[in-house]
Length: 228
Image 1: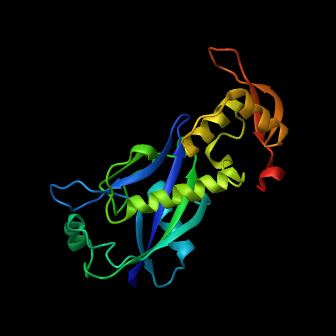
Image 2: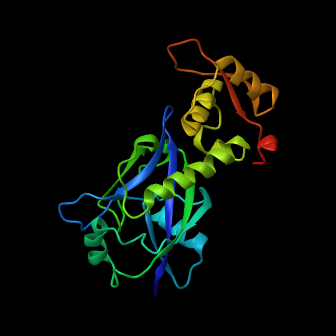
């Protein structure tokens, strides 16, 4: 049985080397009105919140075991009462007027690891720059903002980041990731100095290969420092 009053929504972040992206879906059965949303679903009676979020992510990405963490709860009585959302609710919910409380999760994935495909709840699925997302269904824009705030705090405390970069990376790639998530820019010399002096990374005896410019030194995350 499906619980019509409790759902999970997943904010899936990915980094393309320059921009932080979020995975969006185009909803099915909305007629001429195109509505974009986060992937999510109602809970089944036999699963807990973490299991439901993992199921939604698995169906969308075919990945399991990725970084997945709660980022907030959303229970505004009017969160599913926007008239723009009514066509989809009428097509997909037996009780479209039912109040729904959602528990939000955010996930971090390496974009090159998978090719997301539309699942049962989506017409299509696509990556979009998190800094210029279109209007989203329900209160999903607020859910993205809350997840981004959590991600930024976690990054500042070095609890996340390694999920979005290769195992071996350059300091330029690491700086680009921080700038994309924090929507800011840093002095190159100062950033590198801090990353090395504060032991964020461990230098490797390797350099880039297959690049047209001068190969840069490769690093890996200092897992003991980051608590990985």
